[in-house]
Image (cartoon, rainbow, N blue to C red):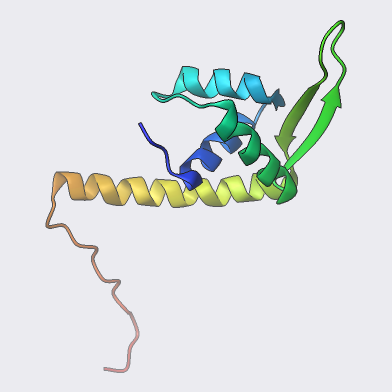
Length: 117
């Protein structure tokens, strides 16, 4: 299954909302929860961009006898962005579900109260 960029950003931010994680751990968590494969060639550039955009913070952790790991967590800006993305996602999925049930469904126009007409 192919995932569009914005959806993958949402998935990554959701995966980091409660726990700090390193790149490979994110790959494991996301592929375990979703029906698609996430590769290192996809995750690391995305994490780098989200960090550069201020949505994530990062820190290096030395591992005993191993390679250091870079852990990511949501920044305050990332939490705000996640909230906005969740709202947009809920609206989008509601509209798609409505169309799946009734392909002719249209959004009702809001009623304007108190107009002079």
